[in-house]
Image 1 (cartoon, rainbow, N blue to C red):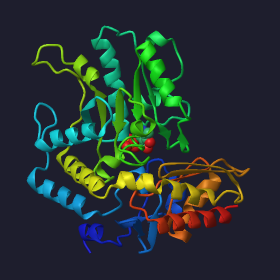
Image 2 (tube, protein in one colour):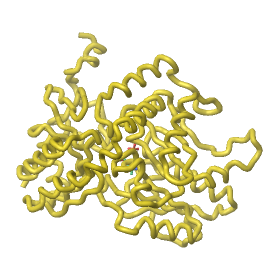
Image 3 (cartoon, rainbow, N blue to C red):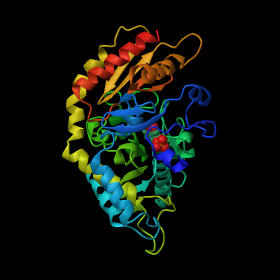
Length: 399
Ligand SMILES: Cc1ncc(COP(=O)(O)O)c(C=O)c1O
């Protein structure tokens, strides 16, 4: 078998795992007992040995429409044939404009301009850069500080990892928060918290950024969590669900006054020195448009909202299991804190994830010693029962 045939074969098994330095993965542990996935359809992944693995994580919070959706696949294929790539700077293609309009229409209030990039981290870098440039354009260049929350996660770009603690109000350019912190353990915003933040930012002229990389596109039962919480930020970052995970894409949606602040100089001059070779890549735009069509046609955001109480009830059945400290849910997200083992923080949850995959046909995500569940929004009530049933067994097994 040639290498290319081997790559295309569904049950391809690389015989050397060494060269690939895996991201956010304990490489040595993984390579001893690999969790290899070769195929996906609907609610299921399929392991290299052919076993079905129920996806309780939407990949990594991104495959909101489930896997292998015909309409999205067809749109990507068609787009690759029609227009593989168009320069992102100084030229445009129609699908970028169409997708920007569609995303803007889903966003609340006057959030009506969209800057595209390729990931959540880039979306955060983009939003922070826009915030700094916005204040600079308005003659407030001293506002250079960017504030984030303890236990916030905004990706791995230098912007996202550099947001810090409290300083003098007059120096703050922007505050960035996740309406529900996902990657640090599922922490929904307390009641009134986002409203209060909005009021403080208004009072001191600070831009409020919601990082909706996880919460966007239906995860909390609405297009954006901003709508759920009734708070309109100045900038929303998004990624993941925009293409249901099929093609990398991210972006920042900004309010009209933010965009307008840049539109003052001579018309031939670039207003914002920022962008990526693959900003609004045609394949990502085609995938995004088909994904938004699917979300609309199948009413997946509404579906998530309707399933929320059942999902929460199912999660709470795990209360009282050995080592379970706390359970939190919001939308179709559940966080389950496990007591750490005396011999290592994160060891228990890692064992849970490994057992879930190898022994129970279930994919879960873990962070520290917390389990995070966020199934595709197509999940059925039976599958919700199955997910929590399996998670319960796994928790018993790692007691
Ligand atoms: C809230 C939030 N922001 C940003 C990111 C980074 O996204 P990416 O991994 O696509 O760069 C993540 C990733 O999970 C996230 O949860």
